Length: 362
Image 1 (cartoon, rainbow, N blue to C red):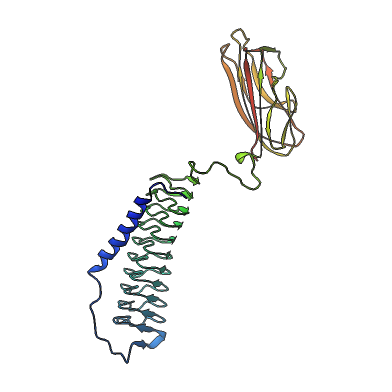
Image 2: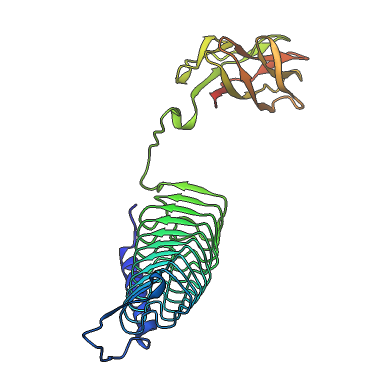
């Protein structure tokens, strides 16, 4: 997806990198002498450590592996953890089945379970969140919640309590803080989203605070959509027709449409000026508008399928006013559609005076 302001994105990236570096500057390790003859330690209960201060607090934990300065430094009873990198899983005490790979990966994790962090500063502030997966620099850095997945630089960087979010792509959902159940795919996808829930963004920046919305593509860039099995912009078939010229239609007569129709797809065809044929089973929608003459009687119209009315009847209250309605119905191949006058006769105004849309929606 094309971003319109690359300088802002570059600045944001630099700020993230600089901020994380400064935040941890005061925590950088001091130089310590280390016995060159014992660089690593194989401990009891299937535990392994390598590095100054790595896994030094262990009591009953089993199957833990720590590689790097102060990796798994506080772990006591946690089991099946792997920390690789400076202070990876540093604060972990009884959290289990976590993997932290990278500088300060899962740094503040205390008792979170089933987390996987790959990359510097990934899930650094996660304390007790479970089942999170972060892959890339600074991914889910502020996270404290459960069940989030992020893949790409800075993805879900500001997420705190939002849960069940999935973001893939550089800076995807980077500004989301408390929104949950969001999906974002693409470079900067959903990057403007902040607190909304249940959104899906594919190749779209999103909108701050919105919920229950799907946005695919950028309207300024993407002009055409092609989906297998769904032609005509999302409708299975379309017919549009209209009538021109003053005409009086008696009771029981069908409204004429005397122009050449626009037809997309093969499910709808025009039989004659008053009748349309449906050529496939499915669900159809008919929308019509009639412009009545000032001297018209106050008749009514209704959509008929095979000669039987379906949906509401639209009645003329004031001569010269328009009549319009819409009806959706299930139909079978071979059914015919007309718009039929009832009650009293109707006279249509001069010029273009009747339009009809028939859409196959399913």
